[in-house]
Image (cartoon, rainbow, N blue to C red; front, side, top):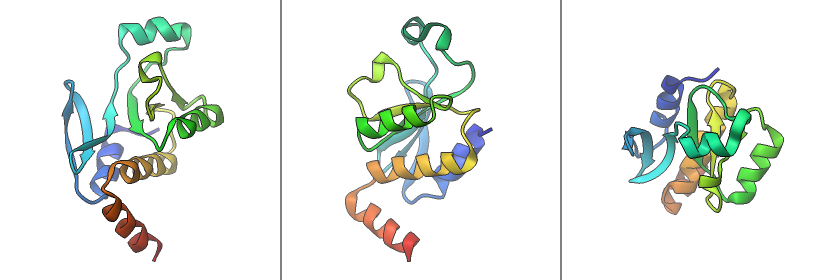
Length: 130
């Protein structure tokens, strides 16, 4: 079970990140671009999801494109989901209490790679992969 402390720690390990808020909730950015954020469900989300609306903490994360979002949801519907609010956007919602630590690390790193400047992302991958 992941926690907000895990999110903070994993984001802090990535270059040029900052913690702040977005719409009154916790948010993390790379060079000013939103990459992961706290995303409580709203009334419209509950109405759209009905009984499938999860309880617990929800993390929003940028992904490469909608294909990636839909693949994550199809592969792990117990962890990943979306709402109509995010239709057309490359972002996925995550049940924080259901994601494994290694999976959270990969998700946050991928969100960082999507939002980081291209040269910074390339340098990071070169350094990481040796």
